[in-house]
Amino acid sequence: MIDSANLDWEKGGGLIPAIVQDSKTGQVLMLAYMNQASFERTLASGKVTFWSRSRRELWTKGETSGNHLIFEEARIDCDGDTFLIKARPLGPVCHRGTITCFEEGRRFSGLAFLSHLEELIQQRKTELPEGSYTTALFEKGMGQISKKVGEEAVEVVVSAQQDPSRTVEEVADLVYHLLVFLAARDVTLTDVVEELEKRHGVGPQ
Figure 1 (cartoon, rainbow, N blue to C red):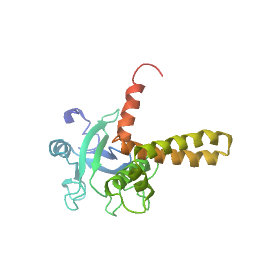
Figure 2 (figure 1 turned 135 degrees about the vertical axis):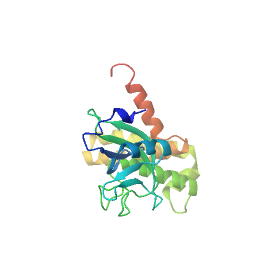
Figure 3 (figure 1 turned 90 degrees about the vertical axis):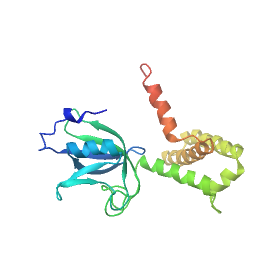
Figure 4 (figure 1 turned 30 degrees about the vertical axis):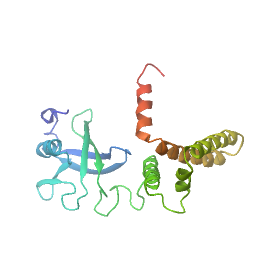
């Protein structure tokens, strides 16, 4: 655990910039400032709390909207004067109603979209809405889901002899069906990433 007394609070006049990142997707959500009191309240309450430079007071994100940031982890940079706060957002982070303050008009981008797609597939599994292809796969069971993964994997291999754009299309199909497969097995992308991290840390690659 970070000891706030060891941080360079004086460099910024008692304030340290805090970059907030979604602990699941890695998406950067916002930038704000913390003083020692707000950081210690964050640790104690489990809800990310900042120092408002305009109001000159502590403020817990979501205290009005209910869209709290649930604290998961804090890291500091090499100079001890910047925070990276990893948190779980309970709704839109930006006052404009978007998930991040840095991307207007797009809720998810880059690899963060995979987590969004994973959540959508899980929702389909739970609700089984009519007319959904994902619903049809879950209703047909693991046998059909596994078969589709195998078929799409073969299509990826075949695309090696085709235009690269075809590979993009086939890999997209494979990734989608793999996410359905994982949901059917009650396995998450986080589980897979943790296994990859474990392997990466064992000896030279």
